[in-house]
View 1: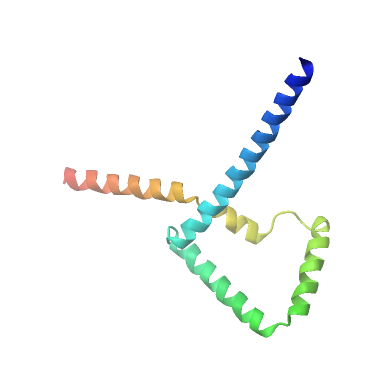
View 2 (view 1 turned 30 degrees about the vertical axis):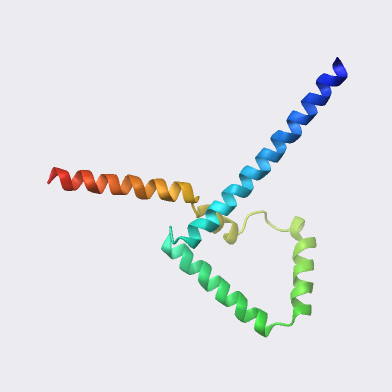
Length: 117
């Protein structure tokens, strides 16, 4: 009995871990969807400028140098501060569900204001 209980408990814990990972991925995809639907226009413009700058850098800088930079960045990650400006900016982007609900509540408020006048 104890063996079967431990097995079911371990399966439950692993499924819960998978669910947490998928929830995190879903949030990230929601942020990308917000950028794609222009939910927050200034952040979308910043993202487009970043993409354009990245494309220009890839045209100018040799791939070998980019590879060395990537490897150094990967292996020195533990010696640097954990949160940077890019991480803070990424956290400010709302999920698509929050953006849509904010637009709906804003539309409802505008309709109630027009009815009052």
